[in-house]
Length: 296
Image (cartoon, rainbow, N blue to C red; front, side, top):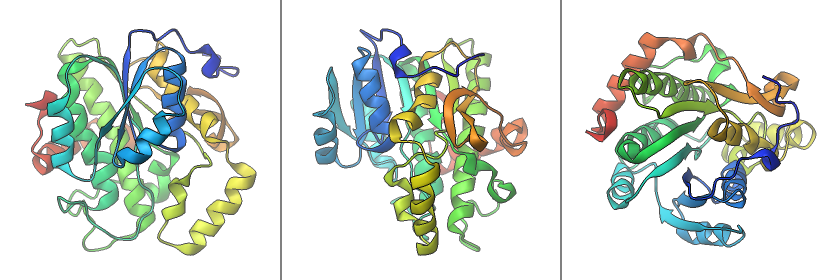
C-alpha cells in the first residue's frame, strides 16, 4: 500500500459524520480534530478541562462541541456515555499520559494503565452500541520498550514501579485491546472495525511530564532534531480512521525507525500480537472497570 504522499488534504468528505476525539484540546488530538472538522465531520472534543477544550475548539472551522471526559475517573467515563445520544461514526481513543511519577487514578489504578488503557476500554465498550464505523486507539512504539509485557500479577505495579515500564505496559495494552476488540467485533458479525495507530515522535507536550528530569531534557533536545510536528504526528491516526484497512491494522510513520514519515501499515511486537494475552487482558479489564463487552 503506497502511502508515501498521503496527508490530511487527502481525507475523504466527512460531511454528516460524527467523530469523538479524546484529548482533543492539544497535540495530535487537536491536530486530528481540526483535520476531521475541516473535512466536514462534526467533532466532539472529549476533554478533562472543558475551558481549554472550548478554547481549542474555537480555533477549528466547522462543526464542533466540547464535552467533559476524565479517563482517570470511571464515574466521568460513565457519565459521558450515559449522556451520549445518536451515532458515532469514528471514536478516536487518543488521550494519554506518559512516564509520570508513581500515582493513582481516582479509582486506584496506576495512572498510566488506568488512563491510557482502562479509561478507553470502559469508554469504548459503553459507547460501542452507538459506534457505526471505526474505533481507533493510539498506541506508541513504546509498547516495545524493555520487552514490555502485561504484569498480570501486579498490573498497578505496586511492588516495583518504573515510569517507562508503566508507560510501555499501557501502550502494549492499547494494542492488545485493539486486537481482542476486533476479534469480538468480527465474531459478532459487526461491520465496525478496531484499528490502532502511533504518531512516531511528535513534538507535543506529552513528554513534558516525564518523572525523570534528565529524560525530559533529553526528549526536549531530541524533539528539536528528530520529531515531526503535531499535524504530521496526527496523520497515522487520520489514516487509520478514514482509509480502507483490515481490522486490527496498525498504522505509523514509514521512515527513520518509525519516528517520522508518511502513514503506512507497520508491525508490532510479538507480545502485542498474542491473542491469549489479549483475551486475558480483556477479562482483567472487565473485572477492574466493571464494564463488559459492548457496555453490558
